[in-house]
Length: 402
Ligand code: PMP
Ligand code: GLN
Image 1 (cartoon, protein in one colour):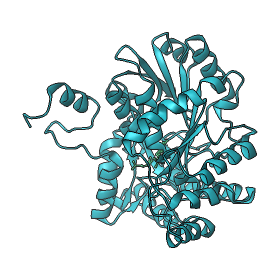
Image 2 (cartoon, rainbow, N blue to C red):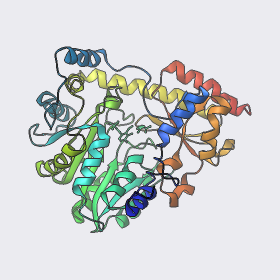
Image 3 (cartoon, rainbow, N blue to C red):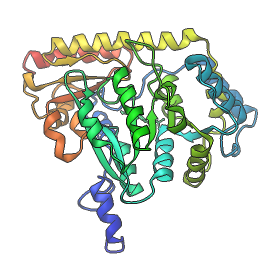
């Protein structure tokens, strides 16, 4: 291992990219999916659906392959998809997005986040403010960008940030406020007041808002409000989404990012050397998906909400204290009352013990703050109702002392 530059090794170890032994550290999702595979457990850990998405979208991908859409698409994405994204933003949010200058198609939301952070961080004095718990790639890319990550805790019971803590975290050193709404892992949707405060703080400190809205169509309690639609936000906001969640095609890795042309040019300048392009035949298929009628989007949301209801009831029955989500794939539940006060150990044992895999919330938290989230477990609800029903039976074993 002596060949690795020391500074990079320290960065990588600090960001959890490398294990202490110098091995690639698997993500918690890969680790728990492997454990579920080994034990035959129902996988409520990694967030991927176990049903195919809409036939129109799958058929469009097959047709695109047959029609020869198998070479490099243009760097920004195929025009049809760029137009479909623009039309989607107008239809759902009344936004005007120039498909030629203000959008880039990316290899999933993950690449959009990476390209935005790498493009916009100026140097080691810059700070990225993020709500904690956070999706695992945020801290990893922040570390690679060289910026300092400043976290603002989401507080129980509703997982909203404290406005004073948010205001204290955003200073003139803040380059990016990185938002995820609806939120993975907590299932929270930011309150209107917090959204407004984020815009106010970004304006006051001349920061850029990068907002990850991959669960935009899976908001259960109120229609989704992109931050970019707030007064004063558009000139400093990059909005990210992805086809994976909306169309149940997480393996396709088609995402996008839109915002002011100048920022998008900067993002594209990095993105073109990360992947250059990806997903040629999937791009027209996602364009077809984005043009599906409104009923497709509301049905997908309602079906997922019903699954959360099933899952939540099963978890409550098993003795967990359940946090009902306002959006997204996941239900968070507190296992402290049933002996799961150390959710990390609890989740590592659960597949063997009752045949269900889940993710401890501590996996989404920086080391200094793990104690605040110790008993919390994230369960994916994006599974067939019969799978959730089977998981419910197994979870009942916990209440029975299994
Ligand atoms: N952001 C959040 C909040 C996510 O939950 C996920 C994946 N589930 C991603 C980004 C990654 O999206 P993609 O697979 O499109 O890269
Ligand atoms: N986003 C998915 C989740 O939160 C997992 C994606 C991944 O494995 N990187 O579970």
